[in-house]
Image (cartoon, rainbow over all chains, first blue to last red; front, side, top):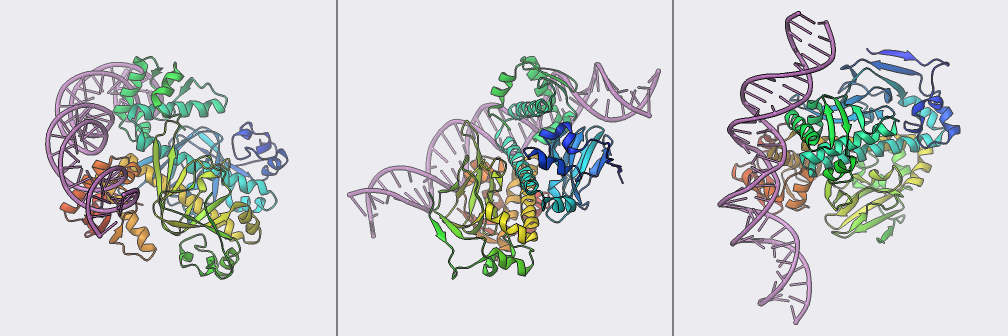
Length: 242
Length: 242
DNA sequence: CGCCCCGTTGATCTACATCAATATAAGTGG
DNA sequence: CCACTTATATTGATGTAGATCAACGGGGCG
């Protein structure tokens, strides 16, 4: 079992959280955000490489990422794995598991991370008094559907260089929204994980990084990426990518 | 504008609909299903090739497919298209549009079709009295997320023959659930549409159909498919596909 | 310090795309 | 209802993006 951390009155709550504008409370009236404070009663720390949940685990909560990053991956009976997402702070994880209240994917920390536990039963309870919470949750799920569809488009319609370019731009934008530099960041995932996510081999990903660097779009040294020519990358990606 | 058909008292309602066990009411207590009857006040007929909604349209409802079939597709600014799903009777369409209440995809009829209109405002209204409706809707959205993730896995991890085999098995299963033959059916979509959906060219799809037939897995004549060796197809697909 | 994982780069192979020609079915209008 | 047109499907020949196989180098971690 993971270590759970009780959220004490002195802790940060939704209403005072820096991720306020990105996470669950996004777009909710300020008055209602404060009601969310009682919703998150605990947090979970996940050390790098460990799982927040596994395929088959009972779904009792969804989770807002407070710090760190995670990947979600499907695994079929033959052990074949497909990464379906890399999640950053402020994003919600676990909405795959609401069909039969069993998760159908694994959620694994890419680095030491911490998530806020949003218990479903308590959310339902609270939603009776806070109607906007219901809509908000619906929006988050719809967003997740769109994210997945966007990935389908990336895999179905783009060539390798376009996929990687789109991946970098997408990451850049999400990091920017968190207040980090959109042009300089550390990749939290390996070449192999990027390749798996994008339907490519790690060699192809590595070669593309080298090529992008050679052509002046980026500077890259292991997992450290500097984007030098965002406009160029954007053109490369072909789409105005998601 | 599409032609709307009022649902009169004599019409079929959710509680008497044959798709009862597959569609929105799935798993809801019988007593609550009857309350859904007042939810669906109209239906829409969509002729083959016409759209139920387009990218950018305001989302005021989701739709339960009553007859026929539709495809959903993304389209980026350059006109590049990616089909993200083929939808059959009993399935719900339109859940992509709940982020900003604008659809981000097109929904186009593959044949003359009819859908039940489930207005969001009325669903919210009704959900106050029928708690299971809220859960049900959540399940449907989670299912859609999983469907998309499964497709990501198909595109990211499977080779062409595996993709097409998985596609046929999946279609077969869904048709079987509707009471149709799992081994003999008419494809409602073209080779090109199948190819787009699976990230392949129409030529590759056509060749695979021919090869599957040559190797005795199926009989195929244009859009008419007979599955002769389901077990063989299953093995071919590699995964136990979704 | 030493081990092992991760990333890079090169050589070669192949699955699928592309280009092209023909066949068949489905509309369409006289 | 048939002639004509236009979509859709099949099949073949060839090209290529990306996979696979293989060797090596560098960093991080115990």
